[in-house]
Length: 142
Image (tube, rainbow, N blue to C red; front, side, top):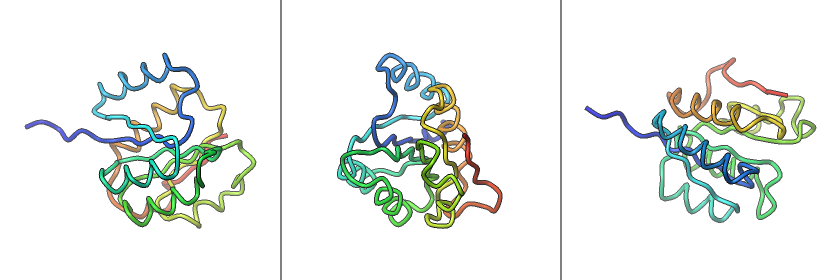
């Protein structure tokens, strides 16, 4: 019996370096996580309608659309998917984002390394249990 391949959607600029992005894709594939990318709110919404992600990484600096609209749409359309937000550390640093969107599980600083992002995606993709997070499962990495 083969294990189900988990899907991760990265919304926004994603990885800064194309070579590091390719390496992340290859590393996550070895862990059973298939990565997909969307550069706009529109692309993300279409992808979420057609696919079932285990985890969605949304960059809060998304320029083509609203990152919070993507997060809300994901909460509505794919409540079982875990959402990880990536930002500059000032926005929602008080943790209020966890009370605004049900399936947000982590908030990471935009200076987090590609290895850290890959580890978070792998963890949340394979740890997915269901919609709303358990108390204490959300965290912020600064």
